[in-house]
Length: 291
Image (cartoon, rainbow, N blue to C red):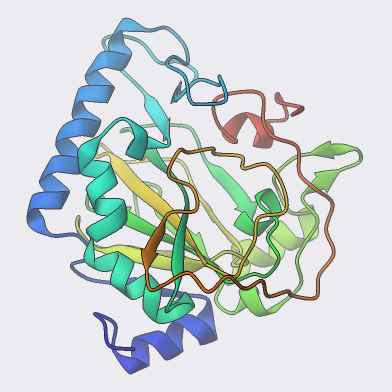
């Protein structure tokens, strides 16, 4: 399938479970996404905790502990495509979507989206996990495209991925009887040793397989690190549980045609609970027991 990725890049995605893409957004798209996020960040100054509401009643905007009006720390916007034409346009029309069709297409549905941001000095980190553990489907052909809205450097909390881990096992993300959203300690130790950073300029992106082990450290710099994360699925990957990030746009066909097929993968996993709070950061902090 023709598209923005070279044959070598497509092969790298299937081999390593991720691939870096330059110019994944147009310059106009990047400017519009940044403008809307800046407005949301400024609006967060008026709130001392999570605020807004998604279609299931949970807060849309999540702030980091220590967030204040003088130093706003907006860290998550759930389903931004529902409240921003800029984000909706990027979800449907960015060059990155054509790249998604190359690796899980030709028939591609939208799954979910969010903005994850680490403001300068933010303490929030993402512990190693696999996205698929949060969203079981009939098969594992799901991909996230992480658009860099800021320059991503080694110092501002970049995504770190474990090459080839998408071909390994689907790890448990439970601790005793609680869904932690984190792999077990011995897997974390392995992932930390084997992980590599995904860095690049604003407007570029990382395409990532849903089974790839990944995480990120706190932002130790004086520069923000904001990602627009849009997830897609092959249209024969049928969701098997309630979405943890519900959206009115879930299931929208963004490339190709509807196959009216279901395809299955051989795996077993415990169904994750839907979080009660604004984002999965609270699950990883073990303060959200789900429903």
